[in-house]
Length: 259
Image 1 (cartoon, rainbow, N blue to C red):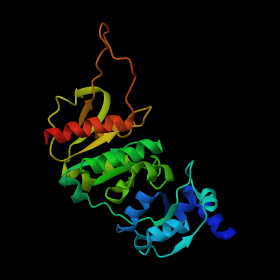
Image 2 (image 1 turned 30 degrees about the vertical axis):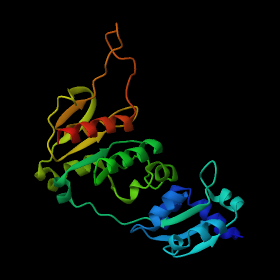
Image 3 (image 1 turned 90 degrees about the vertical axis):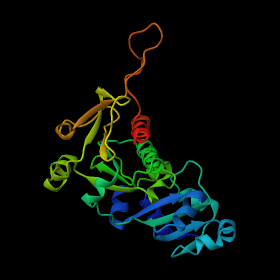
Image 4 (image 1 turned 90 degrees about the horizontal axis):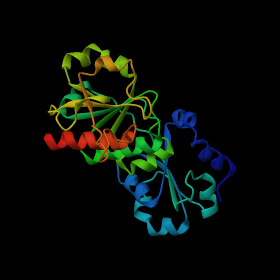
């Protein structure tokens, strides 16, 4: 049985402040936890049912500590609607962004993407299309939020995420000297289907409701848009905008197609 202090600590990791102080995050589910256990990430502890520990003895050996827990205990510490048979506490890695690495391919920049589900899905999209770096504004959803971790489906292990103040980042002399094209998604601009993108560059995706922040706009070198298609017999499309993750997938797929 888990002690009260341990239960309290694990529940505290649901809070951003605790995750930041402890430099730890939580992942749940057999597939995700197994993937983390076999990655370079440090798993400080796993909490699992006796059956899970028996069936995954080899994987569990990669954790610093394995703790047997009953299903009802896992339900008390889980952030999922239905608790999994295993939960892992993982060390948040220290990652430094080297500007020279930005020359090597596409980089996603997320400006105010606050929905955890969108954030996790965008990280999966980056992983699918071979994008190594995602830069997030400091008002994006926290990437170690349990909802982001679960929605990323393990892609957080392969995609390097960096949090930056975007106006400060783009105005930095070292970045500006590299003259990397910066593509921004807007409601109006050159159609993404007609754009001839460079092999390297940055794609800025804006907030779900408000788009790209006004302070970031001056650093956009190429304004692009995904044109809406009107319904038969109508002049314009019906939807006001696209979901941020869907827009990301369309733009990145088009850029990769033309690479």
